[in-house]
Amino acid sequence: MSVEHFTSADASTWFQRLDQQIFLADVLSDDSGAAMSVGFGRYRKGEKNPWKMTYDEALVITSGSFSVEGPSGSVTARAGEVIYLRAGTEVVYVAEEDAELVYVTYPHWLVATESSAEAHRLDDFHQA
Image (cartoon, rainbow, N blue to C red):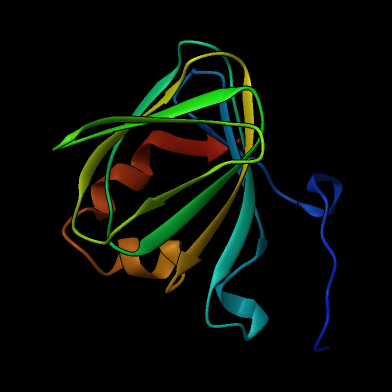
């Protein structure tokens, strides 16, 4: 299919980070045949997630306020705004208030992470 439409309801499996109120779900994953991944994220106010980028990522904030702390400081976006992250950057995702977002990564975030020195970070996630 060359044109597809997704909502968060299309996500078949949501993953939660530890016991935090952080939930992530791909709607376009590595088995889709696409060169990128797309998914939805939901973060409760105050939740944080440290991560090292093994892929490029665009975060499209759809509700709330969301920040990413990086080596040069913190960047905050609100609904309708985008944060772009480059591979190789050490970050902390931070929900300034309850937030929902769409993430778009290239290449697929899971494949890139599994084949990197950061693979251990995936152990923090379990099916919700």
